Amino acid sequence: MRRLLFPGLLLSLGLGCASSRIPNTDVPDTSENRDVIAFCERYRRAVESRDARALLAMASPRYFEDGGTPDGSDDYGLDGLQRLLTAWADEVNEVRYEIRYRRVSVSDTDARRMQVDFTYTGSYTLRRPAGVEPEPVRRGAAAGPPVAHLSIDPVRGSERAQQGEDVWYRRVADNRLELERDGDTIRIVSGM
Image 1 (cartoon, rainbow, N blue to C red):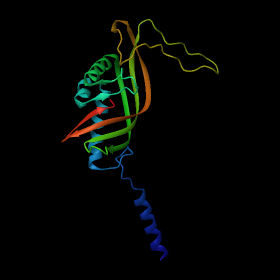
Image 2: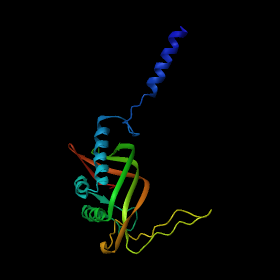
Image 3: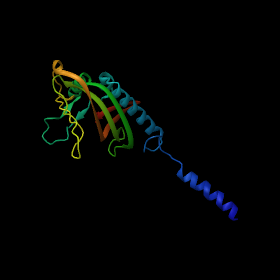
Image 4: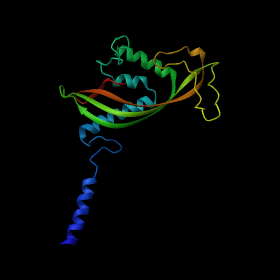
């Protein structure tokens, strides 16, 4: 009896540990979630290739960002997104964009609306204005990393004539893409 119990216990432990997640994500493996993650991967590749046209094509006509502040001066829709993507494509030279998908959820009020929560690591180069050098590396216990004096904001733009060599930046943050499905088409409503 003991012999039969041990293999059965190992088999049940092995099955209990089997993952029902989409590989390299925390998202349950369903056909709907695979479609959503595949769409988000097209988005990620468009970011890496700095393809503003592809990103704009992924946006819903109802695209809207509230800017996260109560005053509304930083809110924008599809026209604002187009301006930002154009400036971004001009200011950013190289992009490495990795995403760890954490959750895909469907809206309680509208089954066509979905949210994708993820953590991204974005590394990118911006052009440093000519004549502005980063601070030299300080030696000693209190020394920190060199601080770049970069006044270029890829969202707000800059004067191209004043730009010099590229400088690498890195950002790790959480984000949410709000998506909507219209038949077989998925579009981004916010979060780009």
